[in-house]
Length: 429
Image (cartoon, rainbow, N blue to C red; front, top):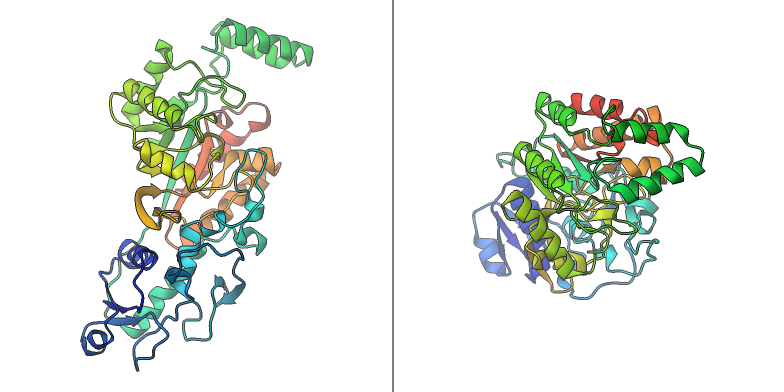
């Protein structure tokens, strides 16, 4: 397909490649030559303010022709029941390409916003949350609208078929709740529970340490059986950073920890869960990559940041410098939904350098801790949140990526009943 565009910028090339090649499976050529466009006999699309009779038109909003970052956020209207931005009065109704670019480049995270306690971009600052469509993968819906638009103009055009898939991902901050934590940490934990008169926790800790009961967080055998029986391909993210205020991990040089990671990797390839401290610290990130690489004896190319603590563009630039090519951090800690407006992966566009990068971003839709720690939702209410998001993803044939912790699957304390919920969701794949 030939695309007419008066100004072919890096932003234009990036988003047209994403929409046509990555999502629709259509090869396109961009051209600013009006005569070539008029005389061509191939299928065509006009992305300009010029009029060419009988040729489908998307009118540009100019976002893709700029290099600056605007201070204001776009307005939201509804097109065929779907929220859209950069609307106009043409047949299609809005500038699809600027809208897609705004979301997947994370443009709004370069605009002024108020961070949360961990320096993160919170859901409440997002356009999608403010206009109550965070639970919709709007980019995926827009591409479906565009597919129908093209099909109407070119009925014989063939598109890539996208299939729904559920992808569970698990962050392993520590494989064990009590075991292999060392004498000092267990003694302090025991004293803390005694002072709080939490006798059940005291007894459980002692029984686990005496090996009379299994460690509640060590759920990997049964979880992996569940994945295998339901033909799922999970991703595990392993924390190998040093102990700290927000990094309650096990020492990575412990033989039993190294054995655990290697065994887990033999079932499903493990990835890095960079420590809280590593956010903004390239040398520390590289050392953690190297540490995990030595344990599994292969390069590490995938990651998800602990606490989802990252800031654009610095963090993604740092990942690239550390050799990471796939990141799974794109989601909110405080709300479920689609931070980048899509359920599918995309290559990150660096707005600071105005260039497409080699880093592929894999968004997730929901994290277990979001419901329990931030929204105080459990039981059937939690199940409904998962089911509603899952239905949204199924409607667009997307990827339903969920984020879990081995701790939440241990059915302990506030996590009672969560393994049953997890099992039910995995079996409904």
